[in-house]
Amino acid sequence: MNIRKFGSIVFFTHILLGTLLVLNNALALDITIEQGVENPIPVAIVPFGWSQASLAPIDLSKIVAGDLERSARFEAMDFKDLPQRPAEYKDVNFRDWRLLGMENLVIGQLVLTEAGEYEVEFRLIDVYKEKQIAGFRLPSTKAQLRTTAHEISDIIYEKLIGVRGAFATRIAYITVNQKRDGSKIFSLQIADADGHNPQILLESPEPLMSPSWSPDGKRLAYVSFEGKNSNIFVQDIKTGKRDNVAANKGINSAPAWSPDGSSLAMTLSKDGNTEIYIMHLESRTLRRITNNQAIDTEPNWSKDGKKLAFTSDRGGSPQIYEVAVRGGGKPKRLTFNGPYHARPRYSSDGNSMIMVTGQGGIYRIAILDLRNGFSDILTKARLDESPSFAPNDHMIIYTTTGARGTTLAAVSADGQVHQRLALQDGEVREPAWGPFLPRR
Amino acid sequence: MNTKSMIVLIFTAFLFACESTPEKADDAVAVEDQGTNLSDATDDASSEAQTYGTEDDETSGISSLDDPQGPLSVRIIYFEYDSSDIQFEYRETVEAHAAYLVANPNTIMTLEGHADERGSREYNLALGERRAQTVKRQMTLLGASPDQIRTVSYGEERPAIDDHDDYSWSQNRRVEILY
Image (cartoon, rainbow over all chains, first blue to last red; front, side):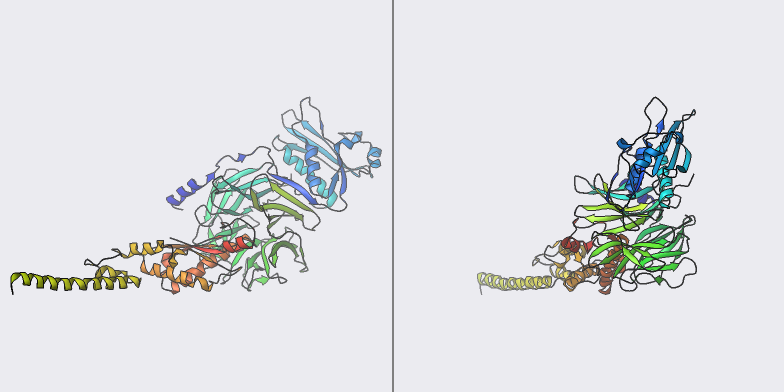
């Protein structure tokens, strides 16, 4: 990158090096449920005990109840209806809870240690069997308390639904706001999966696209037009430092991390038309994967790192193909029923794939079962795009476009749960669901 | 013949000679109207019959670039849904801009490719590029040098109209010609 280009990049964007612009506990995304499961699991969450005279720094039970309710698979008992508020197992009156039909009870305590740190104890209790299903003591700093609450929700979800919860995760997305003079400001942001703690990573007067999380959750790759052309950047989330990894003539876009974090698949048109390449990040060497007059774009790695799915119109219209990362061979076409399939994303367990499917001017999110070839359309609007799996494969976040522009929505992989994620100001699009945090 | 008649004779002869120059001016005008042979016009306009037309090629080219009625005033080519074919109505525009590039070998043009918002964003980025490349290819077939034509795609990211209906989409499927 020459000096002039660097100068223009600094001029055109605000890069928040060293510090992240934290918008406090402000809610970035307001998440509402549009549709839930028919028989949500009843759960009673008792406000956690706190032995100090001062106010507790956080209401953990409220966050847990919020998480479980928002999943639309649980119904949390109203706090005012709780017959008792035990903090310890020995204080639980099982008969009271059974009378109310509350089969699942969550109790806990927040403890301030001598060192000034915290410990969170919680127990998930089966009220009919009078048994503890799960119990943990989790150390935490003050700043980590919210995340700790989400970890508790994850454990409860796993014990009662059978799938690891994805509450202690983050999402990345692009926002677009209009200034008074009519010009636009684009930003790349991350937030907790419940919409809290938004952080701006980049602001630019030129478009931003395609955020993609590294598997360790520490970096984001994205496309920026700040250099008056599409370029790929990789940015460290904590420090804000970034690398312009692809700035060739033509298109540089669609970055996709390999599961081992060493490489990025990407779309480059420097050799004549859009093709898929794999860049080894440390050496910056490129390996070409497709060689075809058609549009080849939107690569996505299978979680075992062995295959790439991508969009190609080599057959006349956009469809999804799959190719081996090593050994090449002819790409195999995966989609057949319909004139338009694009934007593939493998599930973590490798059993399914989500995509955009288009027919008659209507574009929706579909899920394809890779084992039997059956597909289902999950969403109901007319202009849906950019689907992203939660790391537990249970929820899919995506963009939907209405009369007032783009907004986020989420749907469960089985189609039963629908959520809306509205931004306070402006439009929001291109969500990317981040990975699980390492398990304690 | 006395001197006075001589003077009248010479004066009359001179008048006839003057009358011929308007014809020469007409010739200069006729050459000008043919358009591209501007250099011929400036050569012929060395005498008093100069009307319009300027010294060198580039500035006379810019005056036709600025001409609000001329084909070079059309700077946007629109496309059909999911297509990168140049519609017949834009042939003249493409030809005129290609000819301009041929006549002005130092001029660089940028073709910006765009797509409407439907479908996936990354595929639309490639579709925008395909449109720009199609226009470029057509111009190079007409003699323009590929070194004079830069292409860039914005996909659906820079719509001309921010609305979400058929009319807006038709206005967003475009290639913009920029000098």
